[in-house]
Structures are given as C-alpha cells and as structure tokens.
Image (cartoon, rainbow, N blue to C red):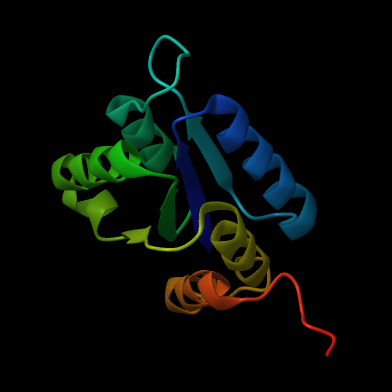
Length: 132
C-alpha cells in the first residue's frame, strides 16, 4: 500500500489537501505536516520524519509545496533509518493536483511508480479547455 505525506508551509493547506484526498481516495493513508513547530508558516523536519515513520504503508510518497519544504524533506530523507528510507520517495509534482492523482490511484492498489507517474502527469493536465 502507498501512503502520502503532505509537507506545506501552511497547516491549513496541508490539512485541507489531506481532507480532500481522504474524501476522494478513501482508505489511503495521508499525513499532513504543515507549518513550523510554533504553528507559524514554515516547515518542521522532525514532524516530517515522524509522519513518514508513522505511516503504516509499504511505500511513502512525499509531496512538498515550495522551497524550504523541499529542503526539509531532503534533510529528513538523509537521516531516516534504512528500513524507512528505502520506502520513501520525494515527488516532484504539483502539490494538490499531484497528490490527488497519486492518492486516487493508490486507492486502487497501484504501486509507488504508478502513483508517481500519475502525480507528475498532473503537471500538464489542462483545467480549462478551449472550445474553439
């Protein structure tokens, strides 16, 4: 089973995205990690690490919103124990759309490769279509 960790500078963005995924994808494990240790905007590597280690998943996809969220996730990846590190993948995809695509596919039993591919494809999906 694939689980997702959502790392955002904003607790509201992380929690709101997690709520959307849980509603649309059902049984997929999703952990939201938003804000710094004081609840302000920022990131917290220790909470990211705890979220990754706390998921009951065979594979973990980590989605990051911007800048230092990526740096924090990379830092965590460097310090994870081998049994956790081997199942974690940082995903370079749009935060909401990519996580949504990955979660919905994960709910069907897809593996991390398939979920990552779907997340990355979300980058090119049109939202508006020209009717001409």
